[in-house]
Amino acid sequence: MRLWLWLLLAAPLSATPQFHVPEALTPGAVNEVYAWDTGSLPALSIEVRRPEGGLVASTQFFADKPLTVEGTEVRWSAALVAPDALDAPGPVKVRVLSEKTVVWEGVSSISAVVFPSEDIPLDEAMSDLRTVPNARKDREAARIWGVYKTFHADFEPEKTFRLPVVEPVRFSARFGDQRRFLYTDGGTARDYHRGVDLAVPVGTRVMATATGRVALVADRELTGITVVLEHAPGVYSVYFHLSKALVETGQAVDSGSLIALSGATGLVTGPHLHFEFRVDGVSVDPMPLLAKGLLDTNTVSGVISRELKR
Image (cartoon, rainbow, N blue to C red; front, side, top):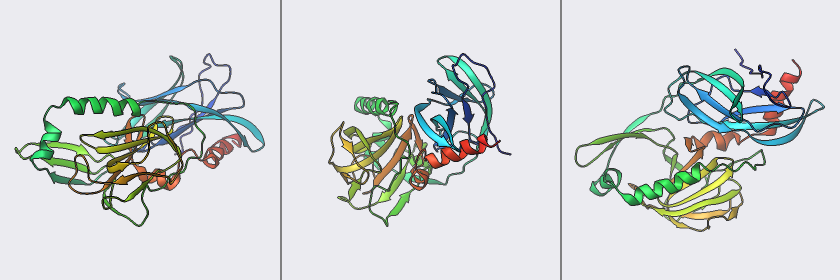
């Protein structure tokens, strides 16, 4: 059954926006939620919660863009909802807020996704990197999370993405791979792979996946030489284990422009490029973004068109 969610409450807004939420939200992926009206849209935010109240995801709507659909002039906005890859399947409640007031409520669900698993033995040095308390790691984690959680609302839609190295290339790890790290002291720890690993030799040219801005260049203990690019509100591409960064923080980049050379720095078992995306700090699978892009206006127009004909 299709799920179309419409504004049901009067709410203290000057207009009555209409909403589209996917029938099911995919964990570890970007799920696009749309709002539209014939007038300008107010500032809105969205929360996704379990029936018992636990928070799954929250973010802001952004943009207030014009679009002509079936001869009608509308304004549209979007929110990018990214449940964590490990979120359990099941029903969720969706709430839209204006400031702190709930102006709409609906339901959706988290779909089920199954990822493969593997064991990864680590040598003593790598085991220590993951297990020994380290003030430098804490500082670096705080810094990169400060970048991931920064939300700049300015954004032009229809963003397309490309693989950051020249194809063909071998993938040595995929997004969501369940990993059990085997430490030299006999201990273990579980995690999942938050991007894709591209098996390329040291010195391979690394290109920007899309137009954007350099948000971070750093030499980090766990991820080695690291570059982070901002592409949309809360949307960042991430490049780990580089041998050399060729851009500076704040620099604008074009899609396909050279940003770095691949390497084997940080916590690695061999040369490769780790490539991932973060949306509001949550890791999402890069491959659907490479295949479909982000906020294609033809898709938005199609959703609105179907509703205008109802």
